[in-house]
Image 1 (cartoon, each protein chain N blue to C red):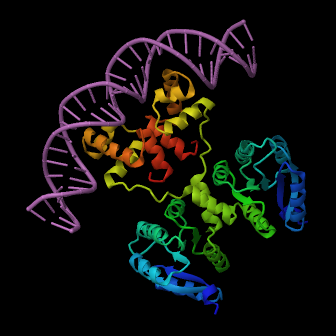
Image 2: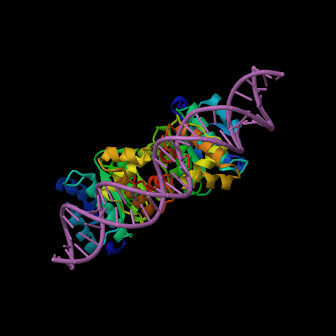
Length: 214
Length: 214
DNA sequence: CGCGGACCTGACCGATCGGACAGGTCGGCG
DNA sequence: CGCCGACCTGTCCGATCGGTCAGGTCCGCG
């Protein structure tokens, strides 16, 4: 009768051996129950729809070797079944991949060589609706998000201009908003572009956005 | 003789009571040692330079009530002393603030009402050079990073144009790069702007960058 | 076999941009 | 005091953009 209280888990990994290993690890935990397995994205969608797990352990590298298949599955899963939490479980750590997984709806990211207690802890966290990242994955997110140290500094005025620039305002409109002339705005825009080494306002906005200045 | 192996900690919080509370909690852990306290940013910089802690517990809300003071301190700390790990410890959870802290060099973020074991675990993780976020902070990062579900889809061509757009190329240059005419590029740019509801290419790049399309 | 979608191309025009001049004020700092 | 940096203003011009017409091909889907 622990069934209705147990965390229902689906395993999505193209390696049967890995699934078997996970199953044996998780079977030792009385509150965890593996209710489904799948080796491909299509299979996963079908079986998950039937078995309604609360957590999906997903290896992004599926048969095709393309990450996109796993990411795509991740996005479709979280869209169709918002109740299920996707916990990505991969062999290698890739900074960009962590970010990509999160963008596609994953609620956690764990590298396969963490010890089992940490994996189990992550699963329980995701089941509770929380997020779970092992320390290296968290570090990867930090690296992806953190600004570069050589970040140029902007004056207050440039900062304001930059924000309005990003929102698509023309020089004249920015001038009106800041009570300065269009010419002055062009002056600031030029300085901004110079500092960011950008060839156009579009690139300036891109660089500034990347480094979190906006 | 545990001193040279202990994690040296600095407490930066403008409330003496909070510092006292933290100190009593951390004193119970034999491997943790509070070596410095500070209530203002200036004080913190001075005392941290002298006592060389490996972890700084930082409350972003300092006396001024402005987050910027704490963020600024965070940035200066991590710049001047890359060896110290800043673990942000705040009362309230603010999605934007988590991101801001990370951007300014923080290696962890914990809300004050976590239980002490989790706090201690986070401190040890940061001391080891790892990252540490409690589950709600991690969730905040996820929310900040995740794309909105209403994200428009771009055709392959639009995707390419968008990338070159972000790198500051003009329509003509993009056309040259993709072996299509300038007119065609303008056609794609218009569609991109329409999909992103942007008034200019600059705003289009900003929106696309925000949602991780580029 | 039509229909739509993605993709491609042309011409035209006013608005805007990017860059180059040439100025100005104000406060801080040596 | 003179210098510098942030900020402000102007004029001029060619390049580019944003928008609007008008067309076209190719392919998949009903």
